[in-house]
Length: 356
Image (tube, rainbow, N blue to C red):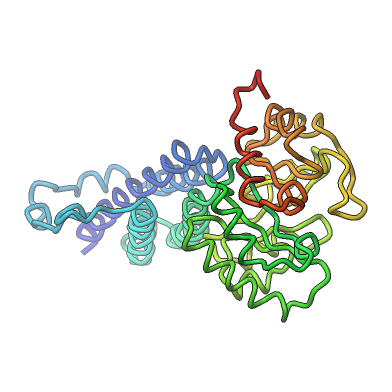
């Protein structure tokens, strides 16, 4: 019985290590996430270390040539034109490793095996992997949304709209080419804002534009927004991240380099830096200037959204300073032709750097 158990353990050690290697490479090469990659490598190395005492005996029981499963023909996920997507691949390999660790932990409880393998340590590795699977899958699922954080990010501030219809305004800015729409209302009630947010969410979803809710976590959840934008005085980023679905993004406003570094460390998908210039759209806004944007760009790698007093005349230096996207209110909502205003700003953003 002990020899059979060792053969099962050897097979599951190989399965777990193979699954972990794929997850590690996804974190390392696709996401460039050093932290998750190192933690996955740590699980894989700890797995090898735990099996070291039984290494020779495990290898002695390996018999791949006579494995009955080796001759089985299993359906391929690529047959019939159906291909495995990346999230599915991550889930499949994480489950493969987790199930293997469970098998090893259970067999390690046998009296003949327990002197060589510590069941509790394999259990702990499995629980560590559960957490890493969630973090890795979350990053992958948010990746496509993060990629849309380019060019123009229009904030539909209801006070700046001055009574104009929110849905009509959103349609115009989407037609102009805006990639992101944020709904913001600092004075109205949430009950009044909820149906508006619902309509905007539906419009943005149909148009392939990100819909971000400002400040209100409950409304973001209620309408299934693509993400939430918060400030330094709102709920902590860690709380917001824990409450939102793992495929939703979070942006955070900062005025200092240290705030930006902290935001990236805590998991912000993008950082809004500002105010770039003086603005009447936000009371008490601190003007930090384009120089601060340059400093933040050197300190963090997540997308940066420049905000505050940006218009057609000064958008060039902002883009040259390292902004991935520019958020505007008055430069669009203050115009009669919203679509035309968006197009003009985007045209300026796309000029070669020397002509900005």
